[in-house]
Every structure is written in structure tokens, then in C-alpha cells.
Image 1 (cartoon, rainbow, N blue to C red):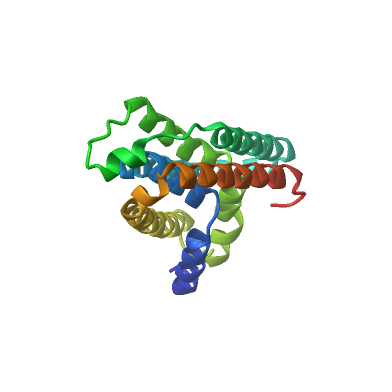
Image 2 (cartoon, one colour):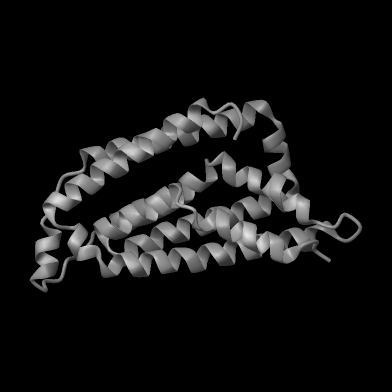
Length: 212
């Protein structure tokens, strides 16, 4: 029996809904390329959580977290990737998509855009050491060691994934409603620059954090 299950649900919900890298990426891709792009980004994020769950069940997540070398490699790769995404956002060109949407014209998004969104989601979460630490530091606090550990770990991971899915679907739905306003050239330019600066800042912060 999992100890303090509802406490874990509350903490996991708080961690998921507090704006971070996942929220920023889903917001950026939804506002720039539409709800499908937001969904593909979300799918990448959720798939990364499934992968971390699988690694945690095998005990490999603990091995990675306890290895200074492996943990540092993941941390710096994650930081570099965030900085790269930030630079891309800063260099992004303004589009006339907002005007086309306002005129009711259909806008065809290239399939490769969705692939890029999916890649951003999965790579960012796989290289996020804070996601790893959730599995090896937070979840164990709610596991009853007198019972089978694996079923409890899978249950906690399933709760985290379910909360993440609900939240990301809600974020995409809400942002898609106001998307046309964000795609106005002046607003889009400011939004991309702010997004780029935040992503770069998060990458630099991650790189120089001694403990995450």
C-alpha cells in the first residue's frame, strides 16, 4: 500500500502545473504552429516520462542519478539543448500566419514541424535531471518498503503521467483559443524573443546549478 497517496497527488500536481520547460515548449509550439504541434510536443514529453518509468523499474534511474559522470553529462546536454532552442526562438522569423487565420484561410503546417515538436518534447525531458530526480528522490518517499516496490512505483508514475497529460491537453486547448492574437507579427516577435531569452536563461541556470 502506497503511503500518503493523496499527498503525492498534490505534490505531483503542483510540480506539473508550475510553469517550467515543458510548459514553455508546449506554449511556444502551440502558439506558433497550432494545437497539433502542441499535442506532438506533449506526446514527446509523456513518452519521455514512460522511458524514465521503465528505467526506474529496472533500477537504472538510480544508477544514473548516483553516477556523477552520467548525471553531469545529462545535465550539460540538457542545458546546451535548452540554449540551442532559445537561440532558435530568438532567430525565428515573423510569419503572416496570424493574418491568414484572421481571414479564415487554411494554413498547412509541414509534417517535419510536428516531428521537430515531438523531438523537442522527448529530448528536453530525457535530458532534464529534475525529471530524473523526481523518480529517485520524490517517489521513494511514498513507497512502502514492506510491500512490493515495483507495483507502487508504477502506480506513482502512472499518476504523474496522468496529471501531466490532463494538464498539457488543457494548456494546448486554452492557448489554441487565443492563438490568432499571438500570431500578429508584432506580438509574435516579442513572444519569440521572450521565449528565447527564458529558454537560454533556464539552460544557463541548469548548467551552473551545483545541485538539482
